[in-house]
Length: 560
Image (cartoon, rainbow, N blue to C red; front, top):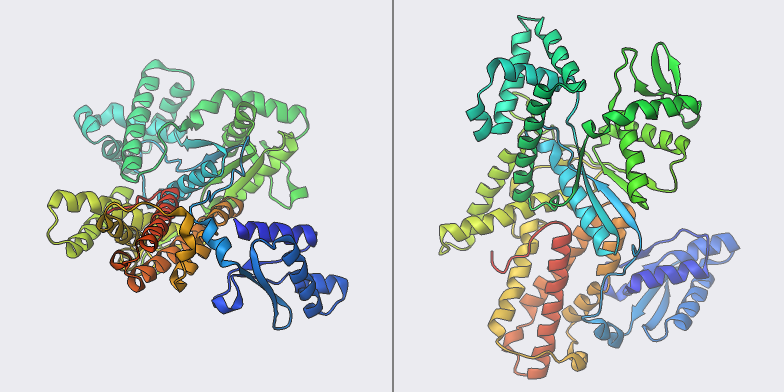
């Protein structure tokens, strides 16, 4: 990872300064460029060009075996040029550093509510969380994937009451989520004319809390059926939550009373108008409400109990909560209370994300304003992807079209999300999402398929690892330089808690690979040694594309 070496070297030579290491848009400006001289010159009260020359001299001493030259440009930019032989030698070398060795990270993501269908709002948490977990595993962390489901609260008393009144066990077996939703909606509709049902629901939840066997069995059935449906959706999305730790809010009910007692005993929690709060005015935050005046605990209390449990059992270096922007205040309060409790050195991070919007820029919803079910989104994506695949390969059998369309659809959904910064809202533009010629998931998969075709048509040609000097075409040099940055792009995802940098890296790699495909007729080359090493380059590009796609939760395809 030359870029990381360059950054680390400059940080060591010029400690305490913030600076950038960038890839210039024009190769004539170098393979890398940095503004460190401006920063260092300002601190030392020097001329930036003089400081830039000092940077160049230092880099040429430190990296003589890698650097062809270092130039001062403009008012003080430093442009670095790599030796061709160094680039050629790096082909096929290990690309990802083991930065997380002997460290553990917990990544909480997806977190749906039982008895309700997963909807478009769950998509971003699930996709972003899964990809971040993949990245952390790739750089050496022991990753614990955590699904914290919503499975407790008065709504389940209402659902149990509805089930006892209007149950249809056949419907519950065949379409569990749909039937539970029907019961819940019917209960609320009936409450409009029979308000006494509100008390009935509260009574059923009270019985559940007190350990009533019948209600406990009903609730457990709802939970297990819901988890089965969630697993089906994760399988459709190719999401790695099998083997994850699954805990619900219900798992921490027994911990809440002793936790609250401890907070009171330590003087961290106090009563206010009958409620129990933690005063967070020192953090410029509103009070954290732990228990309402009627004695009911809140989501924050259960989240705090879960956080303490994770730290005690797993001793992670980090815990990532992949949850929407709207919950920012909740996590600020949670982390502030965590610090008051002195729960150790674990870093807790809220990985925020924006909303999903339609092409009109408004929140994606049905005409009635209801949230769109995730399954409907997937079905639509597969239908549109099948049209794209069939149009590209009219001779393909329907079964093959469907198989490829499923993979293309999932890749399109994931890439459309991950190529954008998570804090931003994302737009569902179906045409752009499935465009084989644009910045899309299918474009990356198609680039991989084209390279795969080169290898299929090449026949049996051995690698010529010792003759990489034959890679002299400008597109080959561009590919070799870009391959250097793969490990850096992966590491930055973990550092920034965002996948858009890796998505951009893969898009640029696909563009360079397509340019190479169009300009160099590899299988027509009558120089056997050069053809062999070019095929080695193609294989390396394919490996990086495949690895990068897998980190994003996408599948590389031999054919589209």
